[in-house]
Image (tube, rainbow, N blue to C red; front, top):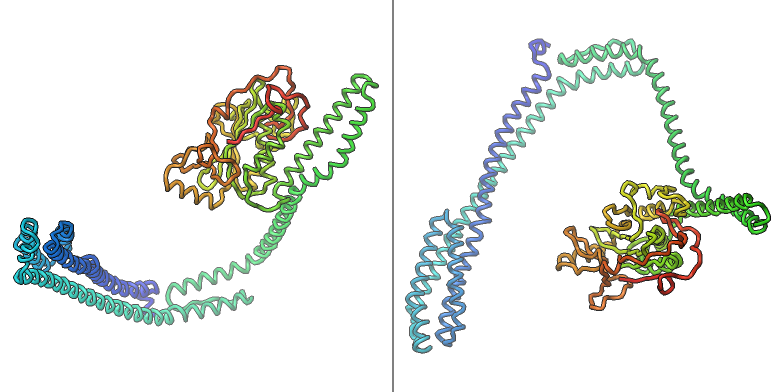
Length: 614
């Protein structure tokens, strides 16, 4: 207690101990860092200098041997081709010597040995090699061989000895570096052992101090707190040990006094929280049930309304057929309104039913060839295109993972929509193309129709959203909502290209198969891609046209890709007759209306329809 009264609080004792241990550990860390830096320097020297020096020394001996072999071979054969090892060896000798000089610049013994070997090699070339080469070239092989004497061989042996001395000097430097690494490594180990001893001693001292100054006072305080927690709220809590713990005991006792006072309020608050939690849980369950009911609503409503609406439509049509002309003109008009309303309600319910089924009735994703799908799309849209004298073309399209019925419905909606919203004086032209952008296929359905204003680009994908009166362009306003839902169901996105100069271009993305992405990367690395179709040229981001895994026939040039110029895909058509009624097709949302009225195809086209691939 006297120690505490002198001011030796727990904090001061702990700080003093930590400061002492910290000073020791910092000193050891500084020493270890210095030794480690030396060890790293020695290791770097061994790996990047003395090690490569041994290799270069052996390489120097090899190129010198190549020179001697080349001279001997030329003296025997007289063929200049046999001098190639000599000439190459001379060039390599200069490079190897320069490398050894650079690596051994800090080792005088190595530099001296290298200089001696170079001087001897130069003397040998001057006194032996060059005379032999000159004599053999002028006087023949016998005269050249006569110059290769025992003295010449001894002179070359001296070169070998000098290179051996160079290798010995390199090996000595390498061994010295290894000894330095071993010495500094041992010093690091000793310093780590000392640091470990310091940590162990400090830990032991800390444990003993904690036992005396912390654990015992806290154990007594905890025992008193447990008594209070057991229900004895009148038990006075007294502290012992350092001043901090005594103050803590006083604070706990104050808290004990407040506990008794606030206990009733705490219980009331707990009951209130439990009630709020139960209400939140009920609301969450209600939201889950409501979401589930909303998911079922569109399907159930559209399905269950079919039968009564069918009866209404049937009887209205019976009234129209049986009593047409028997009542006054206003009655006939009313009946016509009723029939038209029932039919439009049937179409609306059918589209709502189709919308609700997307993603609910699934057949599983398979590989779908969009070229084959476009063939089905052309067949399904033939009546509307024949009536409007529309031209449908498509480039080479990819194979993707998806549900073929949904993708067919998607493209039918877009093509029919393009045919429907045509300009009255221009024959409709619809073009479907694809290109690879990153790991997605970007597919475009472009036409030369009336176009869409940029401010309405986002509204057309909202269910039941219409931009025109139903008298001008019939429809339910759900088609492009179906398109968006199908695209998002397949993991893509859809939008209107507002930068289109003429007509409308609706673009959507679909995930590409991994093998297609990999093939595109390989093709991009191999060289520039061949332009294919109007969307084919590869851009800076690696866009490439669809691959040749579809059923589209190859172009006449043998490239394996069908190509079409812009002039072939978007020329202006002939003007339609002014008295031709507005055809029944698809509105901006792409919904299918009733079949178009019959009539002979116009503009001199076969069957009133044009289809072209590529």
